[in-house]
Length: 274
Image 1 (tube, helix red, strand yellow):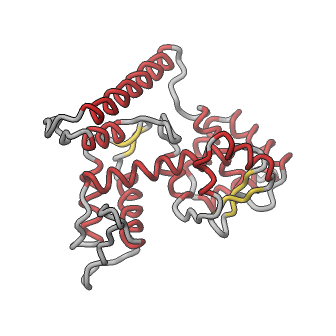
Image 2 (cartoon, rainbow, N blue to C red):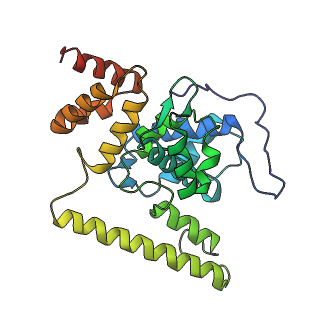
């Protein structure tokens, strides 16, 4: 059950930016977050990403919370998910670096080493704007996007392909709307990246390295969680990470727990209560 109740009052304001694009209100973003969590609980998420049709499911979920919303699967929800996945990937990559932590109280990045931060900016100037923003959805993004086969700003998945199809002048069924050589070039590049990703994934499967418990994504997620636990010293962090990575069943249980229960699990492990 979501935390909004039934929205029987007036509709939320529909905000547009100066360029005429549809902007989202905080209430609308919260509604999408609730719908995403519900979709995961209802089985719309698999190890390889979301199942086909989940965008429409999110649209239905949002309409239950905000009946008069004009936000629809394409382009609004697709675009928002695309942005959130990019932001999640960027934050996760930063949190894997020594000297950058997570403040669970403020929901912000915590820069412990300015030299590391400056090197990150030199490598990718776009991350500069992430420092002073709050990221209230990040803990939930870990649960929702953390198991995806590909994350980060350059990740390509079927959602991205739909977005590129839409921008290139095609509808979701692949019907052409107009000719635009520049947009089609972007589409071809995206499809090429997706095919490369699929080929690499199949190679991993043939080698018997199917992503699952103990994969590199789990390792990245584990480091992010450890950094968010206040008072956890480096030796204890390494001890917990080593213990969990050596025990797939414990790791699977740990990653399935809510954030607050993960913290308790870590202290129990260190105290020898497990």
